[in-house]
Length: 461
Image (cartoon, rainbow, N blue to C red; front, top):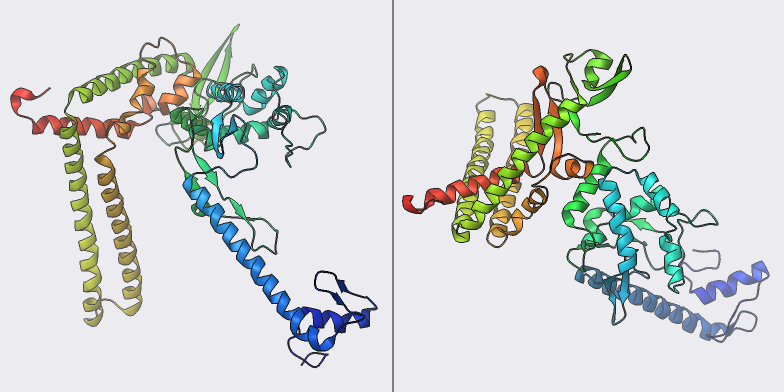
């Protein structure tokens, strides 16, 4: 029992009985309620009932609003109050983004500079030096009543944080990522950040500003541990990409003065700091020459493969791809059956006293986990087989990145980060270049060889 003699009271009745103790008079105009002149008999029924109705209405409205917003997100409709920098809202459809030519040009320059090795701080400095308006000031210059919580200074200027938010935003390749935050309920306005798997991510929602491969290259560059060069304008050519082929540690630059000249080498960090690797090094100029020659040859190999694939019948390539995936699927199914057989034999081993109960539980857990992993991999192969039918040409889009640089005569930072994954230096001055999309190259080569093997001898390309 409560202090008023009841376990559950309506809001009106509760306020009526509470306010005399507090010396407060409560008046609800819409409900025609006054705690000083209340009709206890009628208010005990009417006021609580109205509160229940209002509460149900608010809850229902909130649920419907959330549902409609989620439908729009999943459909790929843009539901933000303001378009991101580089886009504008379609006057005829406010849920659709159109390219803003001026702002899009600024975004393209930012991605281009980053590929060239310019740091985000120097990119911000360039934008300020060129007098480019920040996203907030640009929106305001277009007559929008825009404000942002990221502004911390009275004068709006570009900074590294602004540049990073733009360089990492997939909206510039036509992808909308919405629904990142929510609130617990319509009553609680505290923001809750949702895990990525609960976001609404839809591709090809609008015209991209940045090429997908350039965007991926920029994400790769941002993840590298790079430093600004001595000039302060760009990082070094191979910064963050050279590793020791013997131990896997990073290769660091070391400058050795000799008379009036200075020579720069790549040396193994593990050997320098801990003496746990071999003492091997390579001059920067020599590495540039080796990588350039290797890259030229690989570019020509990619172009030759691309030309051969275009001459090969698409149906034959699809059939070869499906046959190869089918072989992988069969092997994976054999693996699943093997783990299943082991699981079945465990109980017999336990009954025969070959293993004890603790060993039985450990082995059962291990075998079950590996069987589940094999089943997931089998499902991934099946999904890949489904994509193979209509995705063959799209799967070769990366070849265009190499074709664009088929006439190179020197390396620059953009070429290196776009086409090369990493460079490994071994003892005896041996260098291995790991290219981007190297697995895709091998896959396409295997498809071509299998497709040619399926043709009559006289028709082989």
